[in-house]
Length: 453
Image (cartoon, rainbow, N blue to C red):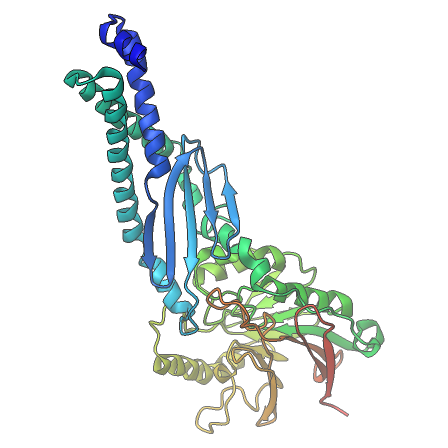
């Protein structure tokens, strides 16, 4: 060190001094990145720590501790490292979590700026200390060392920003960001789907005069629910799937990355209506899937059955729609359905809605299609139930997603539930159905219900 100091103080080789200054700047920046505490962001129940390190891309440690690396986000020289934590609070709801995340952007920007300022100041301090050791109290060279350090830090931040793929931050991108990190934790959030071993009399081949159809609802972002529904359809030979909505939970675009790839794998027509947790953007995604038929005050024919569907007019993840508005929306839809069906070229065999109250009611002043159509199929309540209203069978399917993932909560799932419907191939009347349910990883039970002797 003494020899180096003496040589640097007496040398006239400016290029050597410049090279040493750059080396000092790099050492100061690297040391500052290593020792500067991470920036902490609080957004409701979500807490994130953000810091940078030499490298490229991002490394995100999810709420359950799984590290997800994305080397393609930027070409460096800085890698963004994020550690996410979610406070376990049974009182926290999905809308509260979503609002916390939506409101976090200003806090993220502020925390990132403060963090970079700390890194820059730390780099300057370390650089000045190193310069003092090597050059002594030479004001001109100390100033040059500080400027070099700031330049190194600024160049690193600038190069990282310049090489960042801005499109990667698109919430609908399935390769980056929210969706990828959410998918990483799914194996720990949900048990495997129930095992489907249908009895002989629940097979399509055993009922040549009947039309088998699977009825599901309320996936709520649980991909194992769709695995269960697909296994039920394939093992029984069902010719179509009716989905009463709430396929997603939070109303954010990245959710499509969790469920859309599985929906594409169904080899039969997939009839879907929007639930109160499904956004308009997700409906557009569903319309773009080849085997999906999205119904909203429209009808379609699948496996010979005429199905009329209406999307839920309420959108509730933001909690900006009050219960009174939700009830009014349902009543308005119910009041308009008889006229809509009267204008249809043929009367439907099934009316598919998310909430049964949108279609049928025992209210004499506003019964909807009760007494008009033979079957209303719906979900929303997460409970299987069957009732008859003015001669119309109202079938509530349970939750095929076992209640959904909730606000990243473990242990809150229920049983997976779906129905296997059998319609007469001549009258299109529902003559029998099976309530199919089971816990994750167990063999599902098939409970038969005969509607026609």
